[in-house]
Length: 238
Image 1: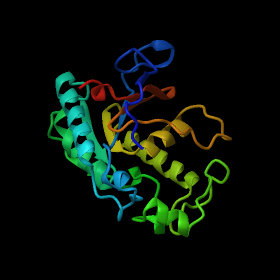
Image 2: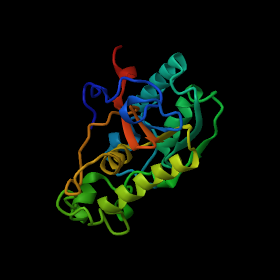
Image 3: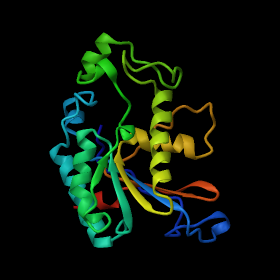
């Protein structure tokens, strides 16, 4: 659900660029910036948005993506990107298309990667949330992270491994580069669970990741490092 204001960006590091252990520059680090898609039509309609249910961005989502594009063009903060990826769900791919002029030199081809999808809903795909709750016993992922969301769908545990693995794969294909991945709030959370020292007993973080916010990671000699989370400054103001 949309709130009245985006969550306040949290900057874990105030040092731009690549920084390694003890604050020393790490010129070999790979940067991965995750962009959450804009507000979606399926969320407005209350529909579960997998490959069948996702119908792209809502008018608000398009405006959010345009605001991010204006910011990126003005600041040039992602002008050094060498690759642009997105989930293959329409809400993510449409967001990537809108913000592409502000990434790299503005001419990067967006590669659709199914590994960056949100949790696969299986037979729940395209149902309204009310229909889903009537047909299936919704799993409590905090208590039963290995239980599928619906027949043919993923469990939370499987999703976290798949999504975090997709991000590792992107970083592995572009060592030392800046990579942008437009995807979903669940993918942001999967990265947090696998790249930060989170207890194995903690299955979910329930993060308030705003639409079109930026979350940045660096992968260097000391492993993954969170640089910023939920940076949605472009949504603040008129």
